[in-house]
Length: 193
Image (cartoon, rainbow, N blue to C red):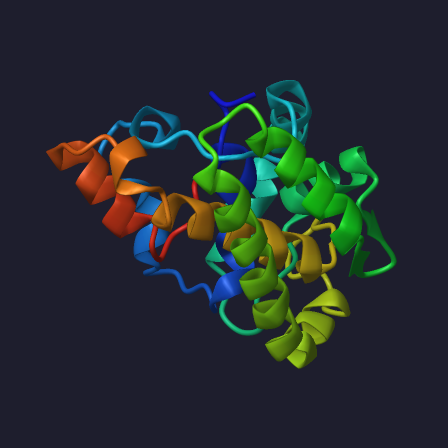
């Protein structure tokens, strides 16, 4: 599970900011590194659960990133949350999410427990501050044929968690090299696609 780390989590960052056609995040990371090669973080789901959701929804997610206006919900994220039974009717079960992250952190260096708890607090506060925008994204009409509208709360929380955990990787656990440093800078603003 550690190998998947935040790739499982951060695919969902689309909802953190308005997406435009010239969005530099659409080009992808500036290096061919996987985040797990730079820092292994606690994760929410097993690789197979993530990959099933990613395969089903990533092409729609990429198309949505190029649409201006209110950020659209990320169906990859909602699919992942549904697979963990954490999502229902626009709500995330914070207690269950906390348990999953803490269980994932148990075999890892001890500082991850507090980092995970702090990240959960920060991400839920951020989502609360964006409630109106998140709710508006949940009621958007399809912008292209076949677009599924998913609630933005899943992507908001998962993107925030993945990006925050990666950003807070303890120095002793972060692989310091040019590629990982570039990846860290890139992922301070962009999701993992």
